[in-house]
Every structure is written in structure tokens, then in C-alpha cells.
Length: 381
Image (tube, rainbow, N blue to C red; front, side, top):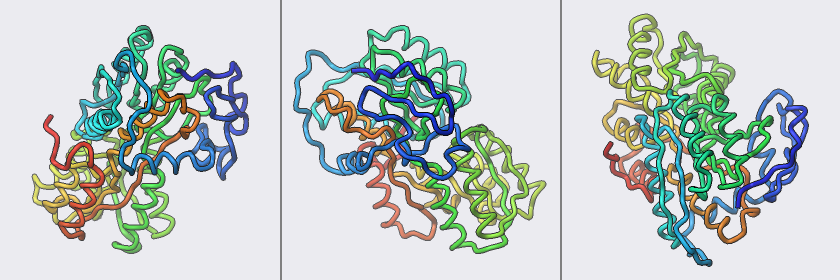
């Protein structure tokens, strides 16, 4: 059931390929611009033609019941930073389990929760699960940060006792000896460009901006770096300050407080995740500045949509959030039915922009679609 790799290791991070025994052919399948400058592949370089679109279509359709039989429930371990403010993790856990219920697959889950800055704790959990491989059929790993957790991903993916799925990243690292079975995510790079186009159309050129960035690494490079590069190049924007808030609400609050005091010329604050956006909003509200600053979030979580409704947050790249959990359930079904080779190496969910110029019905419709499994109400914590 577990993916096996060849013993060959990537000799050149730019061009060398690795063959995988689960149906993922030698990687990369094709080369896209910039491949030689990256230590990771983008989805278009590793997904076989049509596989991503096929899984997206399945996820967006009514469930088709599992055709096989089970002697016992499948055992699923989840290692992820679900103790953070963002409800991405909790919602996709609900989407996973409810889609499994719809598919008629019996399961039991074991959760290993942490905060996104608790890298060592995640490593401890990964080692524990890897050691207890006989207890699990599937391991879902949501890395605190991709580069920091790369060795743990490699070890989990190399264990023959279970199948390994990665949540919240879509950039397979070239130097992994063992690739996970599937990466599930929303493209931060695509979301950044979607947000860039929206912001330029709405706010125009020659704007002054400050940023609450996350943790240095792939995710922030795309969410913050790609957005910054796009608005500066296309709209001649100026970035006066960048604060690394480590994806925490405290970081968003502290960064925003500093921006408001030291950089009053900044009329926009870009936040790289829900937690920092909520901290940023809190800081603005505390001094009555929430109507003067154009604030962005990331992800379109329930907390962000509520802040948009209150007039405290202006716009956010909104993921159809439950796609990741539902797609993972479908991947488990495909694996149980012996069809794992039909899956893409990287699954991507859909992203659009939710904003404060939308009518209530429009936001409600987006929210209903995005959270069709986990529900539109804010989750209790």
C-alpha cells in the first residue's frame, strides 16, 4: 500500500529525475521556466496530464461509494499545527472524515497537534508515528515549514508501513529520496498572483504597503514574496516595511502596531495567514485605525470572512477550503481500490478573492461552497 522509491537520489536539483513505483513516472515529467533555479518542482512539472483535473472533478461531485470491503477500519494519523488560530486544519479534518463517511469507508483517527512554530514537537510526533508504523495505514502530515520538516517527510514517505500524504504544501522537494504519495494544497503562488491582479485593479498604481510575513520559506516566499514582486513590478508599489510574525496572531499584532507608529505612510497591510490577519485587525481596532488601513488576509477562513463582514478586513485570497480534506478521502478510496496510480502527485484546490465590496449573498455562496463539509459557522476552539 505504501509508495516505494528507487534508490537513486537526485544528482542535480535542476534536471535529474527520480522514478517512483506507484505510477508517478520519472520526475520531472516536463520542465517549466525557472526549473534550474528552484530546489523544488511545481505541480505542472510532476502531474501527469489530466490527473489533477480528474481528481478535482471527483472532489466537486457527489460521492461514489467505496466498491471494496474492509476487515477493519483504516487507521489514520494526522500530524499538523491544528493548535493554531487558522481553522484550515480543523475544517479539512472534518472534510476528510465526512467525505469518508459518504464513501462508506470505516476509519479511526489519531491526532498529533502542535502550533506552527513548534518545529521540534512536530519532529517528535513524526518520529513516534514512524516508529509505530504498524499502527497506521495512512499518515497525513501538515509540516510547520517545508524545509524544516523535509527530513521528517522523507522518513515518513520512506516507511513501507503506511501511505503518506502531505497537507498545505504543493512543491515537491527535488532532493527527497522518498516522495509522499500525494501533496494536497492550494497554490500560494497562484493565489498571490490572483490577489495581485485584484489589488492593482481596485487600488491602482504607486501605492505604499507594509507586510506581516510568516516564516522564511517556500510558503511565505510565495504568499508574500510573489505578491510583493507582482505589485511592485506591475503597479510601481513601494514596500516600506516587512515584519516576520511567524504566522502567529501575536506577530500580526506586534507588526501592525509598529507599522502604524513608524510607517504611517503605509495605507495597506498585507498579512500572510489568518492568525496574523486577526492580530493585525485587533491592533488596528485597538487604536481606531481599521477604517483607514486596507488589510488583507490569506485563505478565506471563517474568521477572515467574519472580519470582512464587520468591515475590519478588506480582502483575502479565498480557498475552497474543504477541497483538501475531501480530496484526501478520495485518495484513500483510490488506494483501497488499487487505483493509486490514477492520482496526481500534487492536488490543488481552487482560489478566488473574497472582499468587502461583495454583497452578503455573494459571500455566503462562496462560503457555502468552500465549507460544504465543515459548515459555514465559525468552529469552536
